[in-house]
Length: 144
Image 1 (spheres, rainbow, N blue to C red):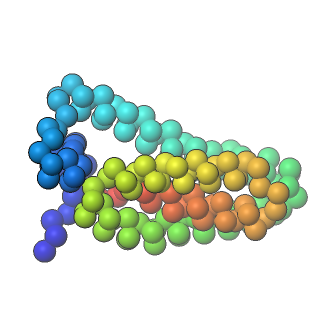
Image 2 (spheres, rainbow, N blue to C red; image 1 turned 120 degrees about the horizontal axis):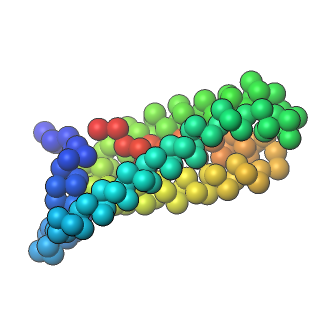
Image 3 (cartoon, one colour; image 1 turned 180 degrees about the horizontal axis):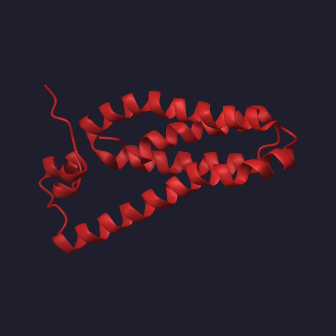
């Protein structure tokens, strides 16, 4: 049986499985504080950019594009559903490999999704960008 990971166990050792196998030391206590502070800031910023900004930007997106608010919200909702589905697989990867790869990949994918959302020329790409943002959120906001 696989033991579930928690945020505490990540921070406690904060070395990748490869580091532990190779015998490399874990981070010092002061380094752990810096890493933890960085994780806290990036979590808050990513939530703000991916989720909370949506309600503020919705009226302007509808005005600029001519798409209905319902269609725009449907794209956002599909991104949320995608995040829930991808989260199942993300959890398995987190248990097997730790947070390094998952969260880094999610950060890159989230950046690509936000750029796509800002510059999308049509609704199909807008919809795809929200689906990508949802997948990225499953990687950057693991729920353990």
